[in-house]
Length: 261
Image (cartoon, rainbow, N blue to C red):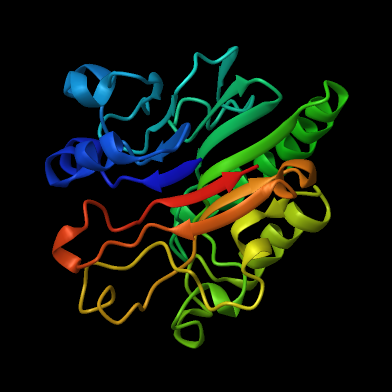
């Protein structure tokens, strides 16, 4: 299972996404920041052979947008999480597969001192309540849950290279980090890659295009697979598919892949 913020799917398709997709062995792929209506995508991207696709663009054209690609047809699809403010924003979709609900999430990035940060906090408040409800509902049906996506929060110091310089910036604010702790401790979810790599710096999944961030591995670990404990225990390997060189990147994020047994 793989999650990746494509930073504009049309652009990514021209820079290597299509080739990556044809080579991946993943059974499920969650995309964020698609930034396109389905009709704007080439057919090889919109409905690639061998995949079932669910595209959820934002009402505001050219923004956000999430998608889920699955090798087998989903048993159910739900867009949004019951939010009057956010369900049209192209930030959340979930599909039911046998025994597991898989979601693609693009949490707002925020910006300190602006309405964007207020929006992020409202989203977080509503979404945490939904995550608890989702886990309870899944458990009642004997199902597991995994929420894949760009969570736009680095949880701990090990999750970003320059943490000291970012303590007052969106993505590493104390209140954001505390909220993610609540996702794990109060709602009872598991950060799958961190559980597999408990004592590792990173592995980072996003690097700014500015400067030499990628070459210096000065990144952030903000793309996560967050699962219910039963599914997390089945994870046998988790890694970031980091490009071999800066010029081979087709997004400023890299795919985060987990193998579940």
